Image (cartoon, rainbow, N blue to C red; front, side, top):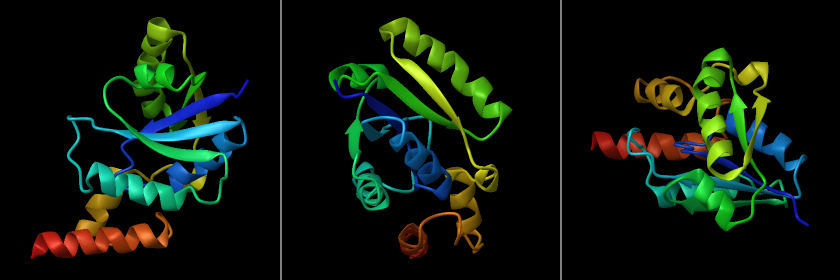
Length: 162
């Protein structure tokens, strides 16, 4: 039996912190599905297709990782693909307090467990929202996202400025 897990997120854009968690999770499961969905409470820089495209490139180093889009509840997606776990990276206590009730609800709804992986200390301050904000003011995001993502962010910002 394949032990499959899902690592969900908006990945808008994917960061080195995300990739740290994805790489470590890939070592824990036979297959890891990096899933990006539509969360209407967040404003997006990139379309779902653009995010999927960046993720496909970003996860190339791990042969047991694939990328998928999903709509609706993550636990329903997990059921559809027979995933046994959801993997979430935690930067600190605030992330834990936000993620724990969702993990408990997901377990209640479907029996799918959530595995929390602490983020690397070097990435503790990195979030997609902060990356977008820093880049929008001309700050240097190199080293915080893959180079090709930094280029895509710069291109997107240049296009939005007209």
